[in-house]
Length: 365
Image 1 (cartoon, rainbow, N blue to C red):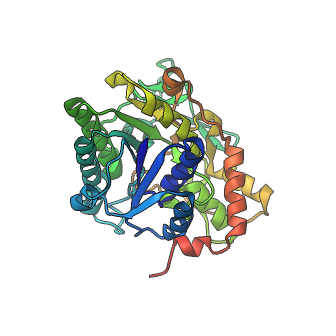
Image 2 (cartoon, helix red, strand yellow):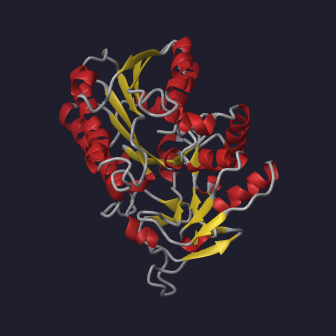
């Protein structure tokens, strides 16, 4: 089997490549990257040594993608991952659309040409901001959690549609606003499924929570867990932003290598209903942790340190996002293998071994 990974020298792409080389020893693994992200070059030599065939290509450029060798499956692990992309002044809205949506179109055309299947890594941020922001929340053990009241505060009405005891299910609303980033990923999902139906190519969409692990770049927009631990260890400024400035906001997390068993089953599937091609793949409630709880973990791992407080909430921020992966468990018998404690310990050990990581991830202009 020939597998092509986009964004192969990013954290997610490189982690998947390493795991696939271990679990699919007979596979021929190809990958491409534009190498423009800080730190991406650090993965290039290692992947080459492992036998990954690497190509320099920008997925926004159709001729770059067209020049890649034919493969049987494409794993799309490339994206501008920031929910503030296009509105924070660091990148333009056009750049976000060209990368996250235009790049997907180019990959779909590649898949059509070579009859290749596509596994699209999507995001929890395709779910609607308004009902998530309006969730009634309580605080327990330093973390938000949904109460059983309806969004308007009236008792007895239960949780909103698509919200289960385990988290946000695939049936949760996806209407705008969901941010430019979320909109490009949602549009990419729809196009991928349409290409699959129109041209008879297998397509799967895996909506992920926060992906985290060792080697993730120390930038908040590329992974709050790695950024927070690296900044804590190096005594860089940290702040609880929004929602009262207490650090109660919660995210779930997943190690990317835990996606590999799921993707292997998807690649081997012969027939899958269209409605079953979109699933949540996340660490779920068992991996959910707040920033305050993350700080407590850091304090026990290293030492105490102050964290600033800024109660002003930024656009598109949400207090609680935890995905329900019950559908993945039911359809694929898939569950994450790496607990949050192991993920944090892995990030911490990497941070200790690489004192230059923050500078590598955030080079000065």
